[in-house]
Length: 379
Ligand SMILES: Cc1ncc(COP(=O)(O)O)c(C=O)c1O
Image (tube, rainbow, N blue to C red; front, top):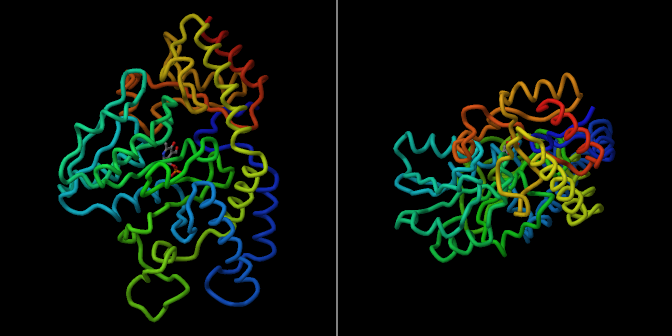
């Protein structure tokens, strides 16, 4: 089987991720932060180490400013709903995943916020300067993805961060498709809120993610409940990360994420990126050469995350995904990829697209195999 759906969830996971999770559930899966006995302390230590490594990856000085969540969607909901107040204006892009768009639309439909979409062009390119004319006196938030999960667009986050800083606007960045592959620094990029997921290029399991919250921002917690400390208080404590982490965390999952982040450190982002970008270029070039195939997103030679989306004339995207799976044993994702506006932007909303997303464990042979399969299907 050839797995080319790493933008949905990375697979396989490094062996150490599996052994770390097994060791946690077998040896010390006590409740972290809820006791001072040795097993609770060991579980707490694992969470702390995972938080420290996640913070380091994003240039965050104090890891208490990272709140763990069950995925990026929860982190984005916390960032958006915890920050915004009635009358605020938000700017977002047309490349967003539904995990950004839906919470924004939810608040908008309730009449609580004003919302402006800044469009990418038909090739999925996004220009930071297009944000300026959309800024209003009440613009509180710019919410954008760092890498489109459909077109592969790599967004100019540092430039957007500069504009946000000039206007005193909070920048929320969804780094689901870039964390673990591209350098990210919350301070250099002026990021106020950063949402990540653990199960893609951080090599952790599903059920892990988090939100960086700038120390000056006080979000309203999404949930209230036990935090292990300050139990006599009726309200959620102000201390971080407890304020945003009600209930028992997924210690086994974060033990896996810690191992995934360790794998990243040992392998090196630059090596991972070089490998994935090289394969992406071969795939992109190869698809362009097949008659009947149309590739979407930025042209060859322009920056893109390791994602290439395409269609074949005369086929529905789901048909192609089905044939690749059943006849060629190749796993890809077809359809709308939870990003319908991005499909509208590049003109693929009617038929959807086939998305091939490359991970560190893919090889040149995998790319040859999918290119050969697409040649046969298109021919
Ligand atoms: C760009 C982007 N944002 C957000 C998400 C949501 O991540 P999760 O499902 O882990 O919450 C995804 C997942 O596919 C994504 O690709």
